[in-house]
Each structure stands twice: as C-alpha cells, then as structure tokens.
Length: 74
Image (cartoon, rainbow, N blue to C red; front, side, top):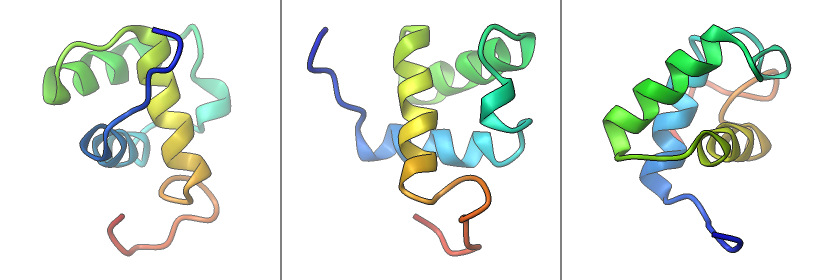
C-alpha cells in the first residue's frame, strides 16, 4: 500500500491516544507502541504497525500532539 493515507477518524483517534503516551520519539519498537497500536486498531479498524505509526506522526505534524498541541479538539 504505497499511497496509503490515514482517514480523519484515524488521525483524531491517534492524537487522543498519543496524548496519554510517552513522547513519540521514544515509542518505536517498545511495548508502549504495541499497546497504542492495538488500541488504535481496535478503535478504527485493523492497521499495520507502519500505518499506526504514520497516524501518530501525522497527528503530531498537524500539531494535535506534542509541544505545539493546544487543548482545542482537532
């Protein structure tokens, strides 16, 4: 799936989950990421781990997670 793009629902859910997680830069290849991946897949439908990671990073890039995050909803 070379041109896969996350849906708005996947991004919103990833942002909500990532706000309760350790910093994204520390997540790859950890049990914490595996848990987030399972939670995201259970909520929005099956995703591969690389797709989940893409959702988390895209949500951060949009400012929905991390230092730039404001308390407003995406």
